[in-house]
Length: 160
Ligand SMILES: CC(C)(COP(=O)(O)OP(=O)(O)OC[C@H]1O[C@@H](n2cnc3c(N)ncnc32)[C@H](O)[C@@H]1OP(=O)(O)O)[C@@H](O)C(=O)NCCC(=O)NCCS
Image (cartoon, rainbow, N blue to C red; front, top):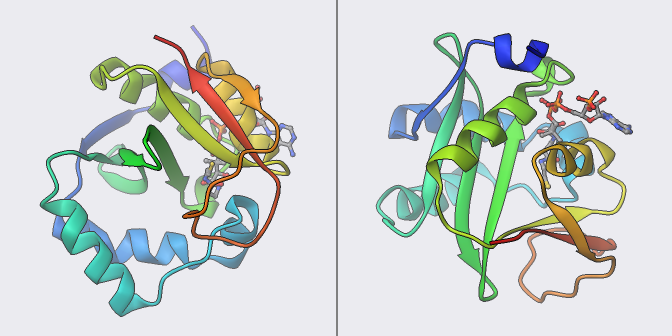
C-alpha cells in the first residue's frame, strides 16, 4: 500500500463555514502563480461561492485531513466541458493529499469524460492528473473564460 492510501483523507460537501479557509488558500501568492489563477477579493469570492453552494450541477467537496480542512476539489461545467479543479493549502503540499483526494473524488463522481485545464508550468498538478489516469490531449488549449493570466494551458482528459 502506498503512503497516499494511508493518509486519513476524506471528502465532504462544502458548507458556508468552510469558505474562509478556502478564501485564504486562493489568495496565497505562491499557489496563485502555480495555478495561473487570478484570485477574487473577499467580497467577490463570497458572492461567487454563494452561487456555487446552491448550484446542484457542481460537485463540490472539501478535502479533510483528519478533521482539518486542507483543500477543496470540484467538478463544474465551463466552456461546454465538464472540468475538475482542486486546491491544497500550501503548508500541506508534497504529502500526497491532492493525489489521494482526486482518487477518492473520481470514485464518487461518475461523469466521464472529465477534463482538467492546467498551466504548462504546473508540474505538480500535471503529475497528480497523470497518476489518476488523465491524458494530455491539447498542449495549447484556448478558452475565452479562464480566470487567470495569459499562459499556455494544457487540456487533459479522463476518458469515458
Ligand atoms: C498542485 C497541487 C494541487 C498539488 O498538491 P499536493 O497535495 O502537493 O500533490 P501530491 O503530493 O498529491 O502530488 C504531487 C506530485 O507532483 C510531483 N511534483 C511536485 N512538484 C513537482 C515538480 N516541480 N516537477 C515534477 N513533479 C513535481 C510530486 O513529486 C508528486 O508526484 P509523486 O507522487 O509521483 O511523487 C498543489 O500544489 C496546489 O494546490 N497548488 C495550487 C493550486 C493549483 O495549482 N491547483 C491545480 C490547478 S490545475
